[in-house]
Image 1 (tube, rainbow over the protein chains, first blue to last red):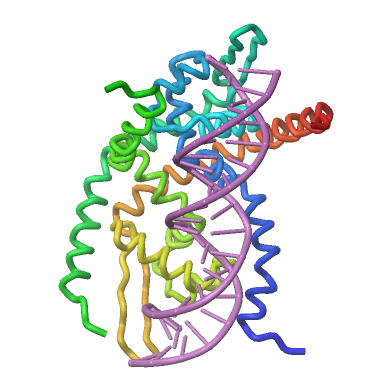
Image 2: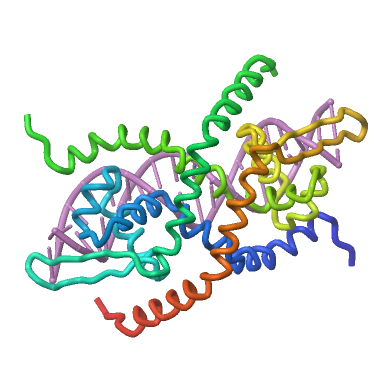
Length: 138
Length: 138
DNA sequence: CTGTATCCTCTAAGATACTG
DNA sequence: CAGTATCTTAGAGGATACAG
């Protein structure tokens, strides 16, 4: 039997997805690209924080997102959670060694961004202007 | 008039979103965390590539994703696209200086991942095992 | 205070078919 | 070969209410 190129691509797709999911760099990217992780990590860089403190500092986060993001970070071993079952209850979050080892990376991303996002923004603007100029009726 | 804490949070939310969107590190993260960008960037690190070559190398990508990702990279000034309107048509893609300046960052993410994803994977497994053990009927 | 459980919306991205 | 257009779907993330 003969497969078309498109069929071959589709046949390879699931294997490839498995490979992608196994790819460590891919996993890291997925781990840190959630909307709030870097903000939480940077906040925890300053030391242990309670749930409510994080809530106050990271203004736009809904409680749901805060909790689920923290859970994910805990699961990945980047953040340690300590609960005290008092009344009212209390939870403290802090970076693990693994979590702290990620901070330099986040810092360099921040640095690259601050140096280059102007250029990116300019590129976007001129590109969008081109598009507008050359826009055509269908 | 008095606002509840929840109302205040919601009031702050849009402003905060605007701030987040203005945050350069956030923008970078969004730019590179699309499923295929790093793969494309790494492939182009080896030099100029045609559309079909990228297609062959980056096995799982649908044509649609490849095209739209490349368009986004072009818009951001990270990739340069050169089209030759011959028959059959031809498009070549290559990194710009800006795009190349991002490669070290991608490399360090790759390096961190390769050093630490084992620890993350172990943490996940033990965490998930805990969960399973302490699972309770509602 | 910390955390779940539900519901609901919106969009990223895949499948498919088509044009120059 | 390169690219566009349309349809569909799975899941991320938000709103809200409730519980220990």
